[in-house]
Length: 104
Image 1 (cartoon, rainbow, N blue to C red):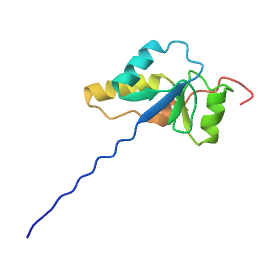
Image 2: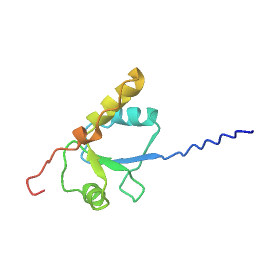
Image 3: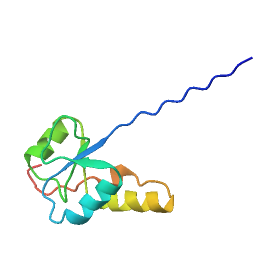
Image 4: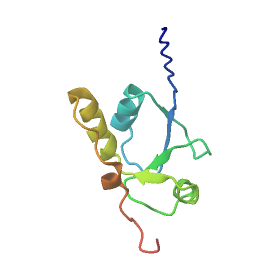
């Protein structure tokens, strides 16, 4: 009897754009270390938008209409820390961008 094992690896790139972020330097460094791809504006391949607070911007509207999330930058700080320490990754739902405008 011959047992054949077949494994497949599927690479899914992490594609992110920013909107209304004050300081992107540290965040860009973390994302690049994690293998993320940063694009200058929203496109259909973006996984989500990183925002300090949810405001009415083109990126936010496109993300929400596409069923994508807007995350607070602190998510990636915690995610990176979990990768370094081997701890469980943080729950993304706890890092959704807070509302920044009453009209939303």
